[in-house]
Length: 89
Image (cartoon, rainbow, N blue to C red; front, side, top):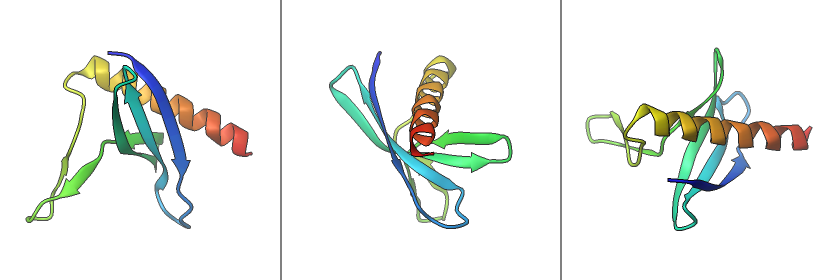
């Protein structure tokens, strides 16, 4: 699996942990939208797209099945976020 494109859209909300939303294209044929970039106590991190269940829990709609894929996705999205943040400054 190859991550062929990452697009970042900044979110402008005062006092929000949500900083941006990413769309990631895999192998130039499949895209996942709404991967959130959030600011945490140890710096930015990503959260996969999710929906709220009837009991109030959030469940991922799409997510990596193994730690290697999760780390590859995390590093590519955060690198793209860092690049776009540098351009905006």
